[in-house]
Length: 501
Ligand SMILES: Cc1cc2nc3c(=O)[nH]c(=O)nc-3n(C[C@H](O)[C@H](O)[C@H](O)COP(=O)(O)OP(=O)(O)OC[C@H]3O[C@@H](n4cnc5c(N)ncnc54)[C@H](O)[C@@H]3O)c2cc1C
Image 1 (cartoon, helix red, strand yellow):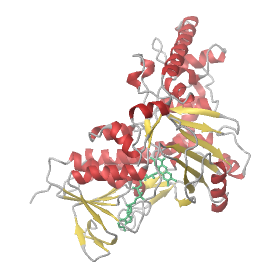
Image 2: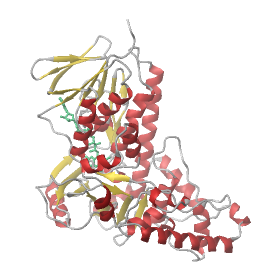
Image 3: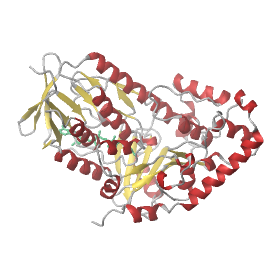
Image 4: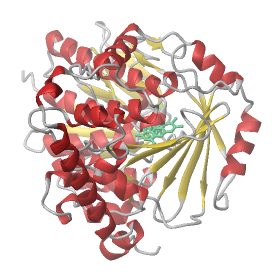
């Protein structure tokens, strides 16, 4: 009997389910595998999740999806990074770009040179050495290849898109590739004697069996938790926000090429501009503000008319103890959730799919492969958790009960160590499987005015007056490049405007 997987059952048709279906139908096209996807007509999707990380471009590219077509179909706009407003204190404002700062200088790290000269007031703010930050500041956008051929133009970008349109887009793609869609509700999950999942039964009493099951059923984790009971590691003592009020609003201005994250009295608020509307949400901890007040504060903050009543979404931060157990893999919200401060969930869907493809099983479900996939997934989540917590722990806000509570949270040792190492001499500790690389950590430290105490000795040997000149030229070049780029809206109108529906 063949050991090869012959049938895959994906439970859930949200962003996770359709991303998994699209990717598997593409990568398994040369194998005889039946791929089924079940989505319930009665249980909705989470309906948020519209800001992404640059990896989404790689995902689309790997599937042969045309970027312009995808943008038009999903009402997408471009995202160069995130603007953080009011995080350090109520007046503060900084930008976290998807790119590096400056260029390495005679073997010395750019940031080291910059901060050395900064202490002597000889250079501009760090943001002036990052083209994508300068583009964002001016509301402009150009694709990197359209900018001058200089290493300074090596920046990346992501998208804001309509999550339901993206799921529809991938559904069409996957169904065209042969994925079989079932619009039914799973009422029962059956298991074999060894605890593997054997099949699912639907509300119409029909059933479906499979070799491999992918749990994309959302926060509840119908297979991974409700059936296999793999357990959940709760991280809410570190990241206490547990609720969101979300509402869409009319666009009151041209879309910004970035997400906005605005600190609020009991959490923070997102603003995600699409071509046809804006997505807004207030992420908060309900120990400090009621759901009704959070909705009202959200409505009060909108810059365009609300398109409906805000919805309340409840969640718990943490991760499943195992994202892959026996013949079931959790992808998306079923595998755990980190609050959306850095838009990491869709990226985690992508990396979960990559792990599944990398360690694609046969019917023997090799435990070594499963252990390695779980090890990588755990590390990845922990590193993201630390990066998100960094935003809170560097804040100096003590103006509300929520922010005073944040001050009292004890950090995980892993994060405390990283911050301490940076404070000594500006060294960024980078572990295996980190989603956020050193430039992201630098943008945070700098945004919160955390500077290293000592310079690295490498700098002793450099000609600082010459480097000062070079930095001046670099800032001028970047400023020129940014000003020459079209406004974000102009770029969209010219290349990828969504058709009027
Ligand atoms: C407040 C908030 C803001 C977010 N913002 C971002 C962001 O900006 N960027 C980002 O990357 N991510 C964000 N996320 C996360 C993002 O929304 C999700 O990761 C993404 O939408 C994937 O969700 P999902 O497909 O796992 O689950 P869901 O969207 O919940 O889909 C679950 C699916 O399972 C099906 N289902 C459930 N039970 C059954 C059953 N018994 N039978 C049949 N079908 C069933 C449902 O019908 C549905 O199709 C955010 C999340 C929250 C909570």
